[in-house]
Amino acid sequence: MDPCQVAGAQRGDLWNVASRDGFMLVAAARAGRIGATPGTKPSVTIVIDKELLEILACPQTHQPLSEASAAQLESLNKAIKAGTVKNVGGDVVSETLDGGLIRQDGTIVYPIRDEIPVLLIDEGIGVEA
Figure 1 (spheres, one colour):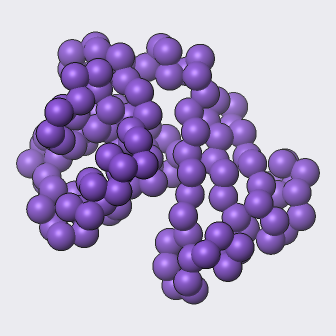
Figure 2 (cartoon, helix red, strand yellow):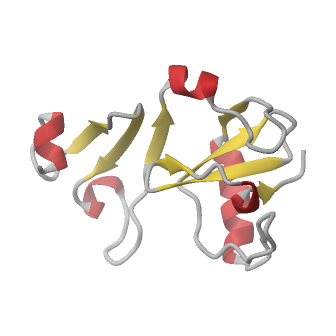
């Protein structure tokens, strides 16, 4: 089914799509609607349902998680583009993040990929608290 139909929007308009697991993706059907240039990844805002966020926890320490701020994501994405970021598993992170969940102590960000938080210990990305 076309996501635009699910959200009741017209193709090309800004639309919201809510999935069964509580994630909401706010995106545009056409990159030109949100300022992205053709051939680039359009900007996306990921919003995690508050009830879901209350039950999510770091898989290693069980600390609560919260959404990473735009400033945190911008800083992390800049470092990813520079090729200087490795995840906890030791792999270089090459894909910028649309969103992330940060551990309560502020030292680990778990990436959100395709609107799904990747809560695997090795996929966590170390950041300065």
